[in-house]
Length: 272
Image (tube, rainbow, N blue to C red; front, side):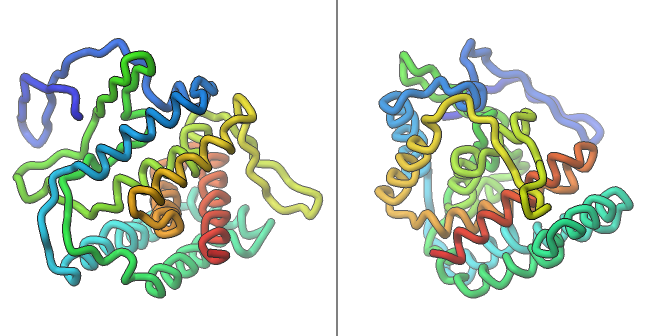
């Protein structure tokens, strides 16, 4: 699944490697430009789900899986939130969001997520762990629609074998982040944060075509067909959006877009 790497070098706390070059467009570029027709997207998602379902796995205690899940989805979020709100820029962005709608207060969003997570924690407790990629967002997925060739790049690093293993839901949440969450549209500036008629902030995605809604439904069906619960995946996805805030403070509008998207996902999960 991974593009072959070579010439690994490590020196004074830094590391580098080279990898084979593939003349393939990444999936993010194809997704935001509306390059997927229904049939082609089904074939693409089929290969993504085959990767998710065929990764090496090993058994573990459900209690141990719960600890890993909490670290990935809850503790990392809490740490990133503290980091964000400790900065003057983060405080300013949060105050701006709250001035339009109290539900966008970051502390309230995190509490809302944490409450939902604790209520459904058993859904994240698995009896196995997998070797994961760590960040299979669409910009890290190379894909050739004509040859059905899918390759992953930029996996999370591991200094020892034990660090390769992770929670089975994490990579799936990252994929949903791109498909259902519109992360790649936001990350590439293809969105607007506007005021609606109630003077509340509203996220508007600049879709390249009207077909994305249908493709999203097909992705949800594929996830369900593989035995996963889409709303559990989406709850984990909300954590990913909120965890990214301190990494994008140089683009305040993007931070607001992430907050709005996370809030809408929590709305969806609560309805489920």
